[in-house]
Length: 163
Length: 474
Image 1 (cartoon, chains in turn cyan, orange):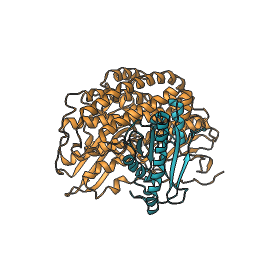
Image 2 (tube, each protein chain N blue to C red):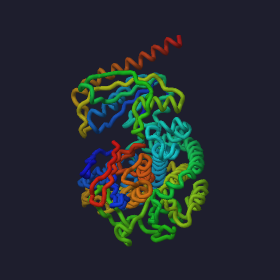
Image 3 (spheres, chains in turn blue, red):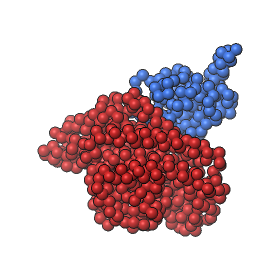
Image 4 (cartoon, chains in turn red, purple):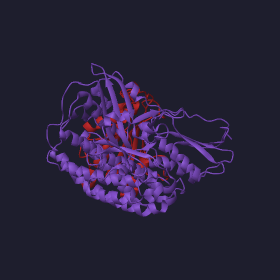
């Protein structure tokens, strides 16, 4: 796990396998966001899998944002959706969780699950290579803008709250 | 009713397995086979690579225990360079290897096995998983996550990342330890120790409810193998190979690990890609032996740290001679977590741990090298040969889970004979057969774990080889 900061209100988690083509888009996005987002606003993590131990930092965030590749979307298509704690446990997984599973762990173990969103990008090429396909690479700036907007909106909300 | 034996060509790196149980005409289980059906091929595709790449390349063997492969590989490369690495570098490697053991044991115990232990082997599989644990005993779930987090964080502090840290290199490590980082690690360890002790206390209370499982989960005499210190203490990084028998008597002692091939040979079976190592002197398959936490606690004269020593003494009183049931791997694992934490504290408080000299530099000076370390699951052996240009020409890896292959097969047979009857298998029996394997915490093809519903395919075959009953979990 690589991290850029800790204890900011927004926790951004990019995940996937950087050696499997488009599956590394979560890392690629998170790496860029770590440079672009103010540290007072966002902590950025890059991980291979969503591990149970992420539940604890997630529980401390005001908003969690997950970024992943999604083979069900058209290549390069960016999709964002709200994700909530799983109601029904998925017992088939152990060390590898889903965003909803992690939110449930955060809520049940640490007393709090933040608002959360998943940003997905349609991916098609999961071959053994460390680079993104052209369509995914071209769509990356749009994904970054969407995530940045979501993070900065929270920042504005916080400033309103403090005013 | 299926008529053919189904071959499942699973090629993904997750741990996939298949079990075949053979029945006689009376419907009794007479044989069992544990099939590991994926193939990794690391020994082949490293050929031609420079030895300097080997530690980082070999770490990719596994996403759960990359540090173990990193460590054994770096040691094999040290041997190729013919250098004695600086003591501080060896101690830093020890710390990372122990942190790896702590986090891996925590994964095995808290995430994979505690659902069975907390809710029972007959519990509804829809509840028998990590989420079930957090409902039944949230403190246990939190503790598991925290111990793993501490182990992972120590690996990250030392190596720069939690998985596949490119840190141990031929001749030592690539960075000395900063005082600030040492202090961060030391600050986390008391909490880890408190959790480990609390969990062991809990385990000892509930384990009494599983006497039937303890009696039938691979409870038979075998040899046990592992590394020990010069004084017979628990050792995970260096030392000597020792083998004890089921009475706890020493069969082999102070044996140089690099000569492992004089003790061990490897057999293959057509039903599995996992090799079957055996003790040469007894032949195949009589030369069955076990490695890992249970074996290590069976073969040492002491652990070497205060709390672990107390727990070890109590553990060894369970049985005269060696503790034979593989069910007790769980107990041994918890004691090793305590040992790992205590030992990390000792090493990190050592006077030379911040020394800047952490790497011996040399060109290759030998054409053959062996690196042996204790991975969480047991003795891990990396054996390399290079050419005059330092390029790999041959490698042999004996992975911890492989050493236990014969014992896992026999353990499944024992549990199946006890719990399976009448040509059918209940969910509870299925789970127990599965749980025998889980005791060993296998890293199938040294890939990874799965929880609760390990992808599993069990076939009951009659004496003609006809499959009479089949159950599959994906």
